[in-house]
Length: 323
Ligand code: SF4
Image (cartoon, rainbow, N blue to C red; front, side, top):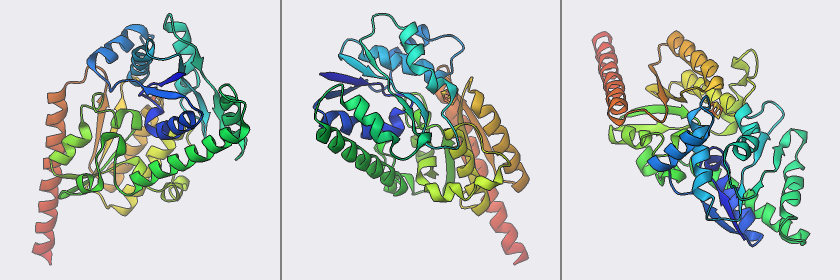
């Protein structure tokens, strides 16, 4: 049996885990093709008009898989801990897909809500796995291997690699300017949607740090800086990573990548901007959608990196004048 996994949204965080899980159960895993203009256009045509661009793109990826597989994995991702949930659009994703796209193969849409405790993911895996095998030992083996695969994936980011873009630490961590580039993985790591933003920055001579390169412990240390935990998982991760870099000033600037029409980011972006202003850290917001032009983006990134270099020269001159 062939199961399809759309190359969008949680794909960039959990794909290695689910791929391993289904493969050990004996399924053939088919991922949708890398994003193209056609996939984006198909999604825009089918999705509700006021959806954010990543949700529209997800529709396009589901359509890309429709004729290739017997079932498509569209999880209802609710939470991975007790403190927050995913954005409401993640919660309603299976319904949105089911009611907007005609002639779909069956969707496999487990509700993934881990706030109830540690054993919950195993229970979910048993429920999903039992649709394909009656062998509980095989499901347990698939679960264990899947978790290990997820750990390996997370560890590769911590070493400075960006696996979905096939960039390793020798590429992301060279350059004379250090930048924290913070945004949802499903935007940043999709080369078509992000207009190859990370690669552009590296080509401009920047060292790039992303959300996933900071260990969870370091993010949690920043949790108290907000009077209240935000409602959304990715938003907490972004703001805490930003606070980490604002505090230790190991980067020359911070770039926030956000999607047009993203409700949660409206708050996150403002909070980051205010804090950056307070500590005089250069900060740039880049809003991406299906119509963002490549040349305009390139010019903005070049201007930002040039400004950072100038700022550093001025700072060094000041030190030598007063030193
Ligand atoms: S967090 Fe923002 S960009 Fe992501 S799915 Fe929700 S609204 Fe869209």
